[in-house]
Length: 444
Image (cartoon, rainbow, N blue to C red; front, side, top):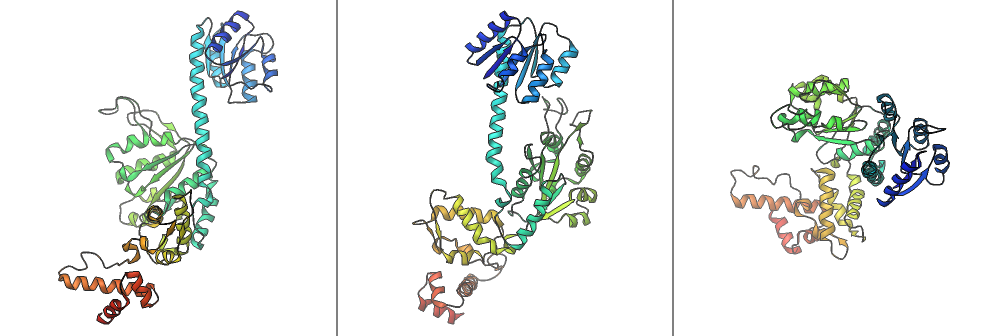
């Protein structure tokens, strides 16, 4: 660390500087604050260790000037005239620590070590933000269909606001991705994004997980715990599967959203929180309200700015672009060619698992590709021949030969439809001789 030691008492200044150098730090000494400030443009320190009482600029004024210059510089104040008021003022102005003389130099070295760890964590967090944020630009959600463009007009409008957002959409449509895009393009992007999976929280731990608890609040609470809402302070909290919150606990959640304050389980004082709320659901909350399964007041509190993500089956034009995108993700070091016959099959498949299902399929195809090419031969049969009727209940109480005959007929009919009635292509798709397919067509 680059450290400035500022003290008009030479013995204290020199001995402390020597011990810090032995600990591996780069240290410069100054007898007054003015001389130290003059060096800031030439060498900007990570830490300033300064005396409080000095001729000219005193420690408190020096602290103010340091924080005005760069608030990230950490300051440790030393004084032989310690008072509570001065200590409080120093901490309010941003001092890291306040140490009374005389002291063991080792105490300062330990404090410097803590600051070093703090700076390291901060730098790592900034690096992670610089890595994460570019991944969640408005173009991170792949698709150019009219419905996606219309959706993103809403996303761009609401991102810079603090408005609550309710994202709806089927499983796998990208609700969490959209949440990250909104957060990392908002004014809260430097704050935390905390996810709560409401579906996996049991009612026994629901309050503790969301709001935290104090030590001894219940059996097993051996120490205080900070809840998700408190962790999300100054950032965004994402409530996934909001429909799974138990009805009797929804009123507590509503109070938090309205008053923007929480109370830990076993606690007696409210804690103010500054958060943005984004919730998501794959169900129709209005219908749940009508059925008495979701509180109407909570619904309106969440539904301030609704955004619906259309399923893949409603934007089949995006499937080709998404397929290329996902395949490139799983083969970054080589370019893989995808044959047109693959796209012809994929755009006709309904993708009940939406973008998540397509992404998983593309990972599989990238692995199975031969000679850097994806062709029809590696497409799973259930995607090549999707049959809504192929389930056990459909064929209940039917003899086996009748079931097999019906399945065979559906598969052949589907292949003919995919090939535009071209029997030669259908035979190739099914892996049958043309004569065999011809006889089966006649049979059915």
